[in-house]
Amino acid sequence: MTPVKNSGTNRYDGMKVLVMGLGLHGGGLESARYLVRSGARVTVTDLRDEKVLAPSLEKLRESGDLGIRYVLGRHDAEDFKQADMVIKNPGVPPDSPCLALSRRVETDISLFLAENPARLTAVTGSKGKSSVVSAMRWVLAEARRAGILPGAAHLGGNITVSPLTFLDSLSAGDDVVLDLSSWQLGDLRGRLRPDGTGEALLKPRAAVLTAIMEDHLDNYPSMAAYVDDKRVIYQGQDSRDLTVAQDDPWGRSFLAETRGRPLAYAGSPVAQAPTVQGWPEPGNGPGLVRLPGGEILEAVPAKLLVPGAHAKMNLLAAALALLDLGLPPAFVRESLGTFPGIEHRLEFFHEAGGVRFYNDTAATVPHAVAAAVGAFDAPVVLVTGGADKKLNYSPLVEAAKQAKALTLLAGTGSAKLAPLLTHAGIRYSGPFDTVDAAVRTALDAAAPGDVVVLSPGCASFGMFVNEFDRGRQWKEAVRRLAPS
Image (cartoon, rainbow, N blue to C red; front, side, top):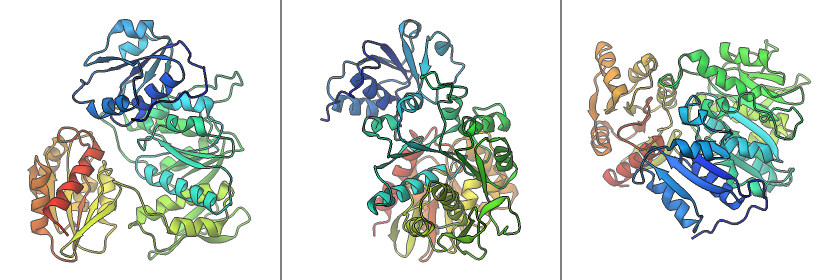
């Protein structure tokens, strides 16, 4: 048992706080813990029942008797009317009728930003943001071990770590890197600091925008609406801050709008274009950057521990931000060369019979599947498909043409994908409604020297609790059915 300790602040003493959406990713759970130890009287409400929420409820119980009141399987309007403050889960639509009854609505991110004393870097995008934040935190932590920077480096946000878990330990010499989804950013639109300065609540010293692709169009009315929430990441910045984005139509619009100092990175050599400050050399070469004085040097090694051109682009974006934060170029290059990658993002986790197995469950859009297939020189046995997010599956179909064999997981997205594959003359197995069946089929197709990769290009709803549950089930089934 890990008892919840007092946070040392009485900001919420005696307040009646309603946490709307306990969830399974940690935000609601950590909001409840933080508010309890800050003196609030907490009620947790969620439309899901105790059975579905069992993992989060168990973690709360392990923290001791917190005195939390639970309203599960429903929302009661009176709870919202009587609460002094409602903590909204990012997955709750902002136009929820229950929120309209509330006096004050916050999120775990807004609570954190109101009290954060550390230097802040924020990252968003459709794909690559989790890799960028993890790489940045890796280098910033290495800088502490090397004595280059004081304090500590922390990572939180949409990467399933609420920043409230480390808020109480922060000081001005620390670095915090936040992974922010479009929903988390949308919840921060127009929000100001509570200290009366008129400064934006979100004002990152460095803001990084990774690749923008079609995503979440099952929840947004248009691509423009989805991207507008992403824009919030830099809207509070000024000339003391940095904005990094790709040299593409979306990225150029971000860099034209920001009041921060704009830095662009591109996917090909553009030494003749002074507006671009980062690019990879062709032929799997290193990632280069142009310093303010015009000097061009290597910031990302040619050989990385994570495969794929997209991985190099992610680290190039991270390098531009790290250099602007004051880290030495040689140190940035060497540290990025040791970055091991992260779980669920083209994660190598097993080898058996000369076949290498990867978990890319976080590839929830078709473009990410294309990047995964293109990351390998070896033949690829691809396991893909799942629930539909109203996306264009053409990039996935094109990627499937390059795969040695194709296996589909069941779901509404696979139901849309299957006729497209048939029309393109691409053979596939499935769709399968169990992970074991998909693994067995992939094993039958694989030979020594091949790569088997789960890269769904779809959401996980239906067969799995979430995308991370999908990745964990995939890894467990592979290790069980293909022992080393």
